Amino acid sequence: MRYRIAWIAGTALSLSACAAGPDYRPPQAAALGVPATFSAGVATPVSDADLASWWTRLNDPTLSALIDRAVADNLDILAAQARLRQARESLAQTNAAFLPQVSGSASGGKNYRSQAGGTRVDGNGNVISTGASNWSSSYSGSASASWQIDLFGELARSSEAARADLAASGYDLANVRMTLIAELVTNYVQARLGQEQLRIARTSQQVQQDNYNIANWRLQAGLVSSLDENQARAQLAQTSASIPQIEANLKASLNRIAVLTGQAPGEATRALETPAPIPVAPVQIATGIPADTLRQRPDVRSTERALAAATARIGVAQAQLYPSLGISGNIGTTSNAFKDLFSLITGGVFANVAQTIFDGGRLASQVRAQRAATDGAFAAYKKSVLTALEDVENAMASLSSARERKAQFTIAYDASNSAAIIARSQYQAGLVDFQTLSTTETTLLNARNSLAAARSDEVLAIAQLYNALGGGWQSMDNRPDEQRR
Image 1 (cartoon, rainbow, N blue to C red):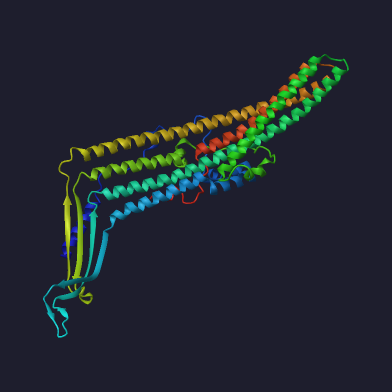
Image 2 (image 1 turned 120 degrees about the vertical axis):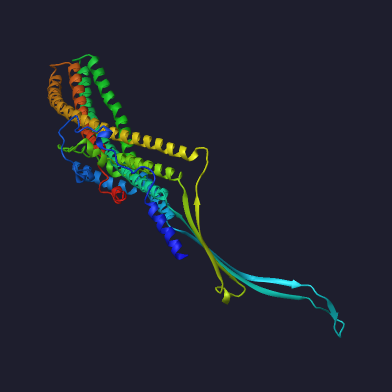
């Protein structure tokens, strides 16, 4: 009997190597429409080290500390980590199907039996029953085992799909981290821009207050009409009106930073209310080649793993068309005395073969449905690749635009600042009217704000570019590529 069982098991294991369904092969870059180079710029190699902590190139310790806090406490990251743990347990549950399932039971107790009989009277006239009653013991134990032989790879393909799902969950966690860092940098830069805009507005407000005082004095002296005084007051009021909106935008950025770092708005960002300059953008940015996006972008790798899982599930559905083989066995014993419980043991081993003969085409339809799902997964994967390339191209265009605007606004600021100084002195000397002074002051205010916005746009474009390149997750714990195999 044992030789027969060994032969059945050996045959089953050799057949299980023949897994149903297609073997997955990652699509090549050509099939995904990936070009050789980006349309703008020269392809420069980019390493994981360059991408892992790209924000440190902004040389802002406060920002780096915020990112460390966010990575540790952000609630979206904690939720993604929980989903990753859940996927890991799903893989463990799937792999458990490869092993025999064993269960056992035992029982013991006493039985009471009473038998009715006649009666008699003793010498004292007492009635005595002649019936019989007794107690008996009963003990039993049993165990059973079953094992589903993976003849055509249904379990192997299920495990393959679960491993791909686990890797996809890991990349989803990486994508949450990558997106979080980019969003935090964006809000931090916007907060510093708001502080710079407040400084500019309040400086302009002070200058315009002085202009209003001069215009009012000249009106009182009869040197000018009330037109100058009204124009000065209107200009001052417009600048003063812009300050509350800037403050509100600044507060919104600070509140968002607090939530991103897993804290309640308010006290958590009190230290950030102290004004600090906008981070300085690095000059050189490595972009690599488009094919790098298949490796660097965690959202792209997640959709690739989803395609692998969908392909494996074709094999799961296809294996259900073929016969299934199961081996089961049981062993048991029973006795009226515990010491004799193992005196007599009974058991058996059985093999079971099952094959669906007619199901109205249900199983075949499941195979076709899973093939359709795989086609959809491939389309989603290709779309994610093309979207990643689009993000990189857009980010490079935004960075180029911001740098060109910063250069031009620097020229505009220098020229308008000189013009405002000249106009202010000439107005005080009565050589020009207030309209000329107002125009130059407005031009200077716009140039200051535009230059500050261009500087922040340059940093934001760099954040957008690094996010598009897939930076920010390469140094995280439990990297998904360690789970891929």
